[in-house]
Image (cartoon, rainbow, N blue to C red; front, top):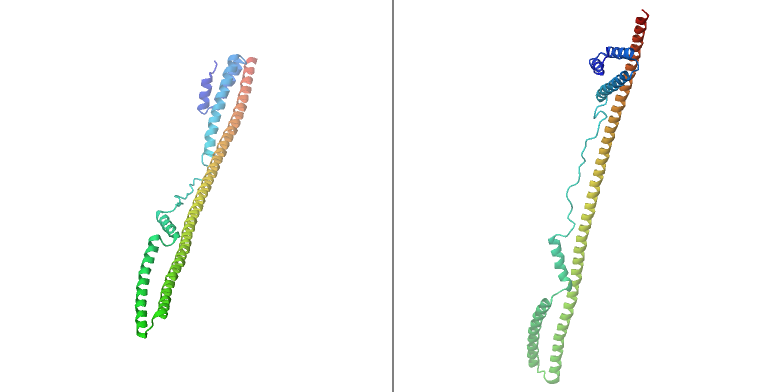
Length: 269
């Protein structure tokens, strides 16, 4: 009788490789190189190799399983938030106030000071005039001498007014210079803070970019580890398949020799 490929494969699956090889040898001895025998043999060989490869895969997964070579599962921290680069409302308000002071005293302030000074000068001049008149009357000073003294007194009063106007101009100029210095300091301070914030934000971005690059390197390392494991699994599975196939071939050859010898002995009788 001829053994079917299913029967031969069942014997192998049940752990009876010697019996399976004997079945193949009997088929070979009885049917020789007929197309049917060749087809059955080829099918059996393919099924045997497939089964050996599955066993090799199982063993390979045991020896080199996923994660055997290790991996780095680490999430690197990142800097959160950004520094404020623009000017705050308070800083901008201070700058605007100091900008307004660049002109020194306002027209209203100048007018108020001038008016107050004019009133004071007027009172002083009136007081001095009365005092001079009293002195002149007591001393009997009249005519050209009295006029000269009165003119000198008026000139002194006018000089005071002139000095006041000059002092106001100098004081206003000093206020302008102080206002300009304060305005410049405010602007430079605000610009310095803005530049520092921009530099800080650039550093934050560079730090986060560096962290991302490091994470990608770790991911690439893990992928390489998985590839090495997979390559090792395939190599082990193929090696085991080759060894098992070679062993099966040796058993088949031995069984074929035994079957041929038995057939020859039977024919001699």
